[in-house]
Amino acid sequence: MMEREDNVKLEEVTSFLKLPVYTRDGTYVGHVKNVFLDMDEKKVSSLLVTNTNPSLVEGSVDVAVPYRWVNAVGDIVILSHFPERVTSSKKDEGETAETKMNVAGEETDIDEVK
Image 1 (cartoon, rainbow, N blue to C red):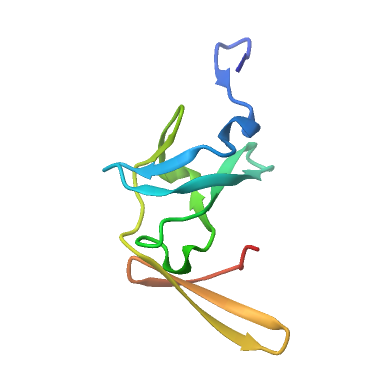
Image 2 (cartoon, rainbow, N blue to C red):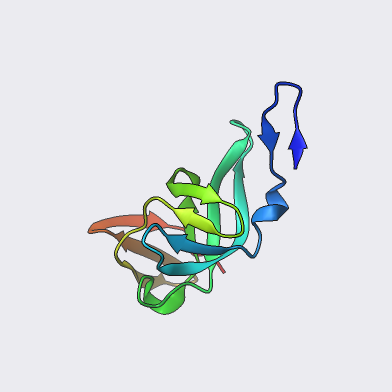
């Protein structure tokens, strides 16, 4: 870990990789596969979680968790929020596939992560 002159501690992005992710009540969500950065804001925007818990995420697909949901990072990542259930439905149109995620009753368009 690095420290800037103003005593703000900086984490290396790679320190997030492979960390297990849990909800606030201790339910396993998955492992961090990648970190998405907002280069304009110079901050972490979300964590890509893989090997997701099938009881939380339909089909155990990879999901991007907004970084604002992260409560604590250490040996594990603890989320302050995660939906009770994440479902997806695919609609093929030729070579393109549209994926909709249903997060806590709200249907949202997302890009499929492979």
